[in-house]
Amino acid sequence: MFYIVGLGNPEEEYNNTRHNTGRMAVLKLHKDLGFEDFEFNKKSNALISEGKIGKEKLILILPETFMNKSGSAVSYFVKPIPKSSATKTPAKRKKGLENLIVVHDDIDLPLGSLKISYNKGMGGHKGLESIVKAVKTKEFVRFRIGVSPATNKGKVKKPGANLTPKKAGEAVIDFILGKFKPKELEIMKKTFKKTSEGIQTLILEGRDRAMNEFNS
Image 1: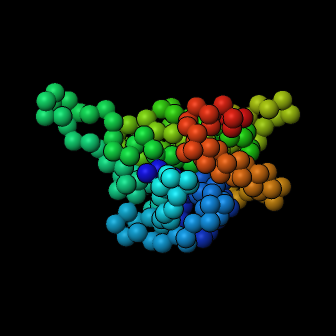
Image 2 (image 1 turned 135 degrees about the vertical axis):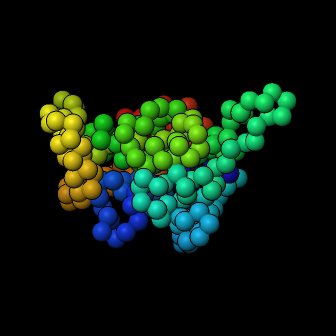
């Protein structure tokens, strides 16, 4: 079973905002796969849709919590393995964790780029921090989608880069909660298609193949 999580904020006012990039990408995957409509799962507080790719079962998950509470939805599906009675040390693996894929926005990457990562830092992303806190590890796959502008040479122009820490934080929040411009949205639609293809490749052919083919 694979668990595909699209991070974002649930209310309509956040539609097409940069921080909802992960949610938008999973909605594209859902459309491509032709799965049944999303239904609200009360126990996880998330919208879910189930189906198969080949012989592999999938659950697409859109947390209905706000971003910084995303871990509560994910931890319903991905649960820790009990401590070993023989060694009395925590088991390293978590149930379902090896098949957890989290899709999210990344301000450290240029607009429209895609990077598949595993066991990497969270970069200050509140949704990721919530998930890591809930599952107690960062050993899972992430599809990181760039949302920041870049120079002609591809250097990222991160929001708030030259401001004081307080003002920089405010600038980042304003940026990620801002909506994509029409031209940006056209770029992102291509990236969502690529993300959908990358997730399907990972599920059917493995993480290494997906990373080699889709990391941009």
